[in-house]
Amino acid sequence: MWIERTIGLQTSRLIQFALTTAVLSGPGLRFYTKGVPLLFKGAPDMNSLVALGTSAAYGFSLVSTFAPGLLPEGTANVYFEAAAVIVVLILLGHWLEARAKGRTGEAIRKLVGLQAKTARVERGGAVVEVPIEEIAVGDVIQVRPGEKIAVDGTVLTGRSYVDESMTTGEPVPVEKTEGADVVGATVNGSGALTYRATKVGADTMLAQIIAMVEQAQGAKLPIQGMVDLITAWFVPEVMAAAALTVLVWLAFGQDPAFEPALAE
Image (cartoon, rainbow, N blue to C red; front, side, top):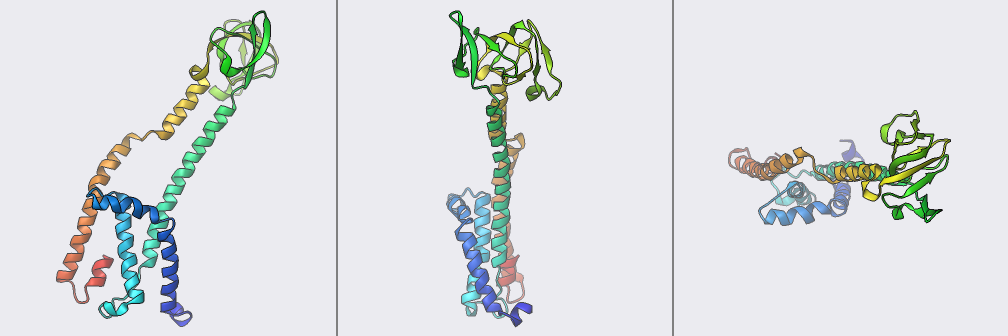
């Protein structure tokens, strides 16, 4: 009543028409480009269901707004907001999912950033600084105080405490002496160490952690297969139930029955 007394119902409908058209033809267009072809192929999915539902609400509202005389008296109502809200809520869910995946990707980038870029390797009787990509299994690597362990290996000489919180979560540095294992990307303490590389490249613990995170990000949960199976049956059944509801309303509902049939 407040809208009718101020801007008027027709003006309100025109505003809703403009806003809803922007939503459906912009961010909501993906539901139609994906769902409508599958609908004609006889294999509708959730996109098809969204496209069909919003199209019905939007189409009926168009007629109610611009050609109300085509409808029975008292049935020219608009459902622009229903079409827009459905699209916005589903897109919000997609955005939250993408945001969660983006955080996982950021975690992977941070893990990659933990790696040392170079290492001091004993070669040909001299110590040379080489990129970690050029380190081979069996290379003898020197680690100075405060430096990162380049790759996984076994300590040959020296004594120090290494911060392994990156892999274990334990904040207390671990003592490393001859024969102890060290992990790439952990941080050496105040002592100096010499160790032999035992795992390099994709075999290091850090590389395996990164691979597991990436695999978890891209893999489907076991329940996803069940969801896909249910969706394959759910969408056609919902569409059939909707069509049956319209027919029952048209056949047995009180006149005018078309508008409540479509609303139901």
